Image (tube, rainbow, N blue to C red; front, side, top):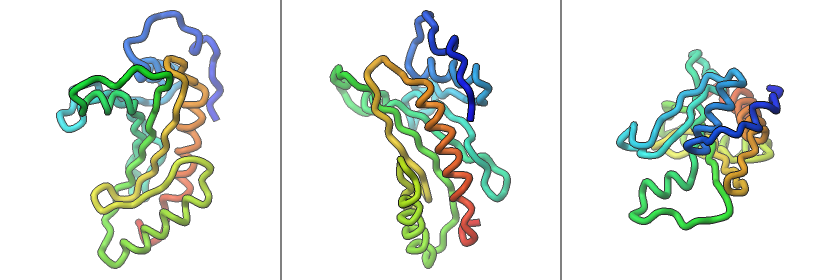
Length: 170
């Protein structure tokens, strides 16, 4: 578990976006994060934070994507999202797998079984994305609980590390 330095959470410097602030916090806590800016990737024209939360059997990083749901809405809607009182953050980890037709049912059942053990979020499977873990966190607008974001990242990493290594998935 990472201990937060309260000085990192009480900055008075203006931040261009909530994800920019979280990028700054996570970098200062020693996380290796990458930030994808608005419009940097044509297929996903919204801001994202990326960080490794686990390794697969081949030693490859499994990447958590942290996304603002409001940014996604604004990128696909002709009119901006209505002003609200909340911010919604989506945590997504895709675990790319090569699944044969006879394993689809097993993986779907595995996702359901894993969901019985996780206290938040959900594992899901679809053939386009493979096995993934998703969680949405709703906060009061403009009041980013950095400690909760860090705890969610740490817990997600634990779940992914613990459960992604099923024998028939490697």
